[in-house]
Structures are given as C-alpha cells and as structure tokens.
Image (cartoon, rainbow over all chains, first blue to last red):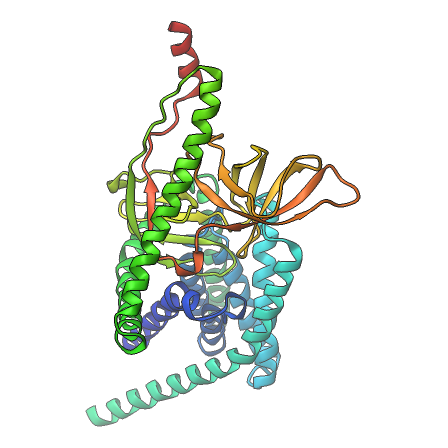
Length: 173
Length: 285
C-alpha cells in the first residue's frame, strides 16, 4: 500500500516535471498531452472514489501553482472530472480503449472550456477565440490518441505492483 | 452496515468539495503573494526542476559544444550575447538621445534614474499550457517584489505576479492577461501592448490616423509605474487599417526570444509612492 502510494507520488512528480520543464522545450505547445488528466482518470478508474478525489485535489493544487489565476481553479475542475469519471466507470464501457480515447478527449475539452469560462467570469482576458479553439482542438485530438496508450501503461504498472506484492506475501508465508 | 458505508461514501466527496470551495474562496482575493501551500510546494519542487533543467541543459551543451560543432557553437553563442547586449545598449542610447532632444527643446532637464538589475534563472514554465508564465529562482529575500519588471538582453519579458521567499512567478508579455503601456519609438504614438497567448502581441487602441509602419520599434512608455520607460518591447510586423472602426490593428513581434529563455533580469525598483502621500509632499514643497 505504502509502496504504491510512494510510486504514484513519484509518478505525479515526474508528470509535473514533464509539464513544467520538459514539455515546453521539446513539444509544440499545441500538441501537449495532459499527463495529469491521464493520471487522474487512471485513479478514477482503478481506485475507490474517495482516493481518486484526494488525488484530484492534490494534482489540481499542484497544477494551479505559477498560474495567473484567482482562486484555485484546477482543483475544482479536476474534482469534477474525477467524480464524473468515477461515476461513468460504473455505467459505461470505459474498459474499451476507444471509449477511453473519447472520454480523455472530452475531459481535455471540459478542462480547457472550464478554465476559459472561469477567466471570462473573472474578467481576466484570454487569448483570441480562434487561437484558443485551434489549441483546444489540437490538444483534444493529441490526448485522445496518446492518452489510452498511457492508461494502458499505467494498468500494466498496477498489475506488476500487484504481482510483486503477491510474490512478496507468498515468500513471507 | 451498508447504510453506514453509503453515508461514508457520500460524506467523503462532500467534505473534499467543501475543502476545495473553501480554498477557492480563501484565495480569490489574495494571490499577490504565494500562499503557504504554494510557497511550500514551490520550495520543494523547484530544486528538482532546476536539477532536471540543469541536466537537460548539460546534455544539450555537450551535444552542441562537442559533437555538433566543436568550438564554433561557443564562439557563436558569445558573439550573439555580445550582439544582444549591444542591441540593448543601442536602443537605450537611441531612446536617451530622443529624450535628450525633447528635453533640451523644453529647456527642462530631468535626470533619469538608473535602476539596478538582478539576474535570475528560469526554473519552470506554466504547467497547464494555457498561460504564458514562468517561475524564476529569485524571490522576496533577494529583493524581488510584486509588479517588478523582468527583462532579458533583448527586451522586456514580463512582470512579477507572485513572490515567495526564494522564487517568483512572472507573467510574460505574450499572455493575454498582460498589458503594457507602449510607444512607437519613431512617431511617439501610444497604445497598449497585450499578449495574444502565442508568439505575437497586439498594440491596441492605436487610432486609424496615427503614423505606424511595419518595422517600427515599440518601447515601454513608463506610464502606470510598473515598467521603466524605454524598454524595447518588439517590432511592428503587421498594420491593418480596416474600412471601418476607430482603431488600426497593429501586430508586434516581441523583441525577447521566449523559446530560448534561460536567464532573465529583474528590474529592482522601489514601489511607487502612494498618490495621497505624493500629493501631500508636493503641497508641502
């Protein structure tokens, strides 16, 4: 349990480093995959709701740092997305990669539209609508294409951790 | 038992939402200084970010310095840096010369105040990708404060929008939330430079009959008290005068190279005096 938590903490830190240090250097800004969103959905799909919400809150707070936002915007959006994902996991066939791609794209859209709406409400201004829509479309498509692969990787990691703990328990027994 | 379990399932999300809402309402008016949580996390994460940036920079330097072109890259880099310094100096001289001419004409000499610059290193970029902000490794303990201008050798980069003891977040002039009172250096036409969220800015509120040409240099006007006067902002790339409307559309390419940000300088200046105090002092004089 502790090992899993520690590993995911490292994963979140790694994703944060990618988003703040590596991405802006190596990747065209329009083609960013929201790694936090992928991690968030993985938690929402694979773990119980309360744990997914705590993770959403933590990642949202981390994401808001360094941004010119009034109030904590990302925690609210991430909590909403985690709750939506966790509820839909029961009702939709989100095991299917095709559905996951669709859902990841939808989440990216909701995140972008949510941030823009909050900024408009705060009268803070934002990039021109046409440019914003192009970026949003590019990011949605990229996340929908790459996201399911990352989710598959995270599922493998979960299985590996589980088998490792089973192996350790059997050895101890 | 199932009733208790269901209640528990409901209570936990409600509690988390209440916590998020209380955080939002607690922070909505006080984002000038970083909150305790922000300062703490920035303090923990930024050294790691700095190390990662250092490693990437080191690998890049090894590649460029030894494998790509031995020696030439270093020399080129040095010459480019010198050229940038000279460009900045030339712009300062040009601005000083123009100011000198105007002031001589008015027979009213005013001494310009040289502001000290504090070098800082870039630590991280905006995590979300929706904004144009950076985090630098100098903060309150180094004398950095809210609204201080941040420049590079090429020109103005942005302004400080939040500080912790050892770090500061900077809103770049590319961001749509940024606005700088600006002047066309040649014709002294005024406007407000706002970011477009990408690699271009827009000079707003320039009347249709004003003299603006492609290639004109845009500088800060010094109005508003945030940015010192005469800092190079960029060059006019496109001027569109529509068939209707009061203003013309002036697109500006920023002078600073934001894609190759490494080192910046914070313009250390004392905070502007309170208007009421200034007025009282003037009346006393």
